[in-house]
Image (cartoon, rainbow, N blue to C red):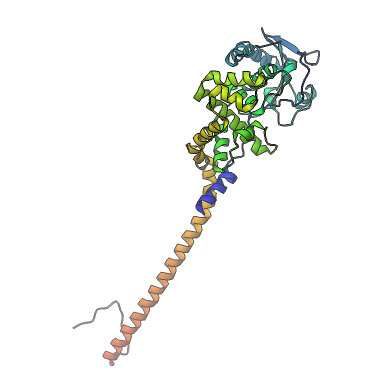
Length: 348
C-alpha cells in the first residue's frame, strides 16, 4: 500500500517535464534537391563554408554565432557518422512563431522547436527569445537538425527509421541529459518500457509514450555505441540506408540478434538505480511532504487525545481513591466533622 502511494505521488507530485527538444521531421518524401528558403528580402545572410544562415536584421548576432558553430560542427558530425555532407545547407532563424510556421515548405506540429527538410537542405529554428527557458541551447538544436539532414540524405527517398533518426540525433547533439534519464526512470518505475520491435515500428501517438520512445531511442543508440563501439552505429546506418531490414542490420553491426540485444539492454535499464530516481526528486519529496504533513497532524492529534483521555481517567481514579481514604478516615475518627486537609500530616 505504501509503495503504491509513493508511486502515485511520483507521478502526481513530480514537476511536469516538457517534451525534449523534439524536432519535426516531415513524414512526406521531398524532392531530392537543395533549395534556398523563401525568406524576406531585407533579411541578412551569413555564409559559412558549408551552409548559409538567414535571419531578420535584429537577429544578425544569432546568425553570426550559428554560422561559426556550423563551420566547426557540420564537418565533425559528418565525419563521426561517416557520411558525406552533400549539398549546401540553409539555416533559417525565424523571428516570430508565425513566421516559423509560414516559412516552412510543409506542415509541422505545434510543439516543434526546430525542423529539418533533408533533401531540400533546409533547417528552421526559432529565435532565442521565442524559446523561453528551453533546456537545450540553440546550437544543440541546430546539431540535432544537422544530423537529421545527414541521415535523410544518406537514406535518399527511403524513410529513416524513427528510433534511429531520433536516437542518433539526440546522442550526437548531446541531448542525452538528466531529463532523458528522468523519463527513462519513470518508464522503469511504471513498467512501461517499449521493446526494440515496438520502437522499430514507429513512435506512439500518445505524447507521454512518444516522450518515452525518444528517451529509449537515445539510450539504445548510446548502449550500442558503448557496448559495440562507435562503428556499430555507422554500420547500422549504412546497412539500413542500403535497404537492409532492422533485425539483419543489427546482427551485422553487433553480431547479436534483436531479442538478445533487447533482453540485455532492457535488463541493464531495469537493474539500474534509475527506477528509484523519481522517488528522490524534489517534486516527489514536496509531494510526500504535502501528503505526510496532514497525516502527521492527525497522528499527533490522535496521540494527544489519547493522552488527555488517559490523564482524565487517572484524575478520576485519584479522586476516587482520595474520597475512599477520606471516608475510611472519617469512619475511624467520628468526632471529626470537618473534612481533612490532605496537605496536613496527622499528629501521633
